[in-house]
Length: 328
Image (cartoon, rainbow, N blue to C red; front, side, top):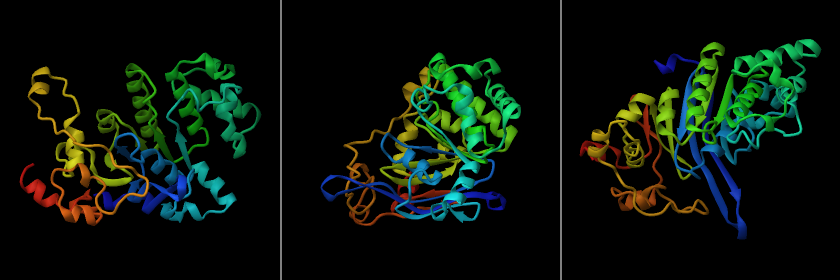
């Protein structure tokens, strides 16, 4: 079914390295492959420091890819010239993690939202003001807020302003970089429901990056799991949560709390032993091998490729068939 849908973005073997001290290299993203279809939400999960945000910023073009390609609507965004890149930014936007530092404290809300409109020359004068008021109402604020400054708003309201800013130039694709992690739990659901509502109304495509596994399941059509810069598994949301195949994904899913005290008490947790290896000058082999109880010598020598194990279900694990046949 997914093959018939229109691919809006595809990452092919995307790698991103950063220079570290003493001539060493930090491998933030290693050989990332993913496809995004128009109108869907792809969730990206993994523990802190696994490269989720770097992946999001690289597919947005905020970071240059060290290797590989990011194909947006048939064109590699990392080969675009300045004018073409400006056109791309009109079609792709980002909602940042921290609503407290992503808004300029010296600018009014009207100027913050209107900045993109001015850069792309979309509206002027009264038409511009009307568009900003419309955007504020779209995200659950009102037009009186336009002349205020960011410090006058709560965290949830600031994130709504960030969403309005991203929507101002009518993009097709939005990277949501942990948009709820800095917010209170009661506000998180409001922001996520707002994103779902806007997606239905405007036909948006989201790359939704988050830590909260339950929230990612709620909003996402498909989910990718990252570990230490590598994509270890991705599949349809329901499939991944009900039948995880990679040992790391199994451990993650076992940590999701169940809102039933009896079931929670009887649930079997899968602990992960050991420390996360350093992403600086990583050794060859599977990134998870040092902490995996199923790892063999082959796992430590050869890096597994992301392979389609079941229809639409991709896993990067040498022993995926053996581990799951045993029901472990």
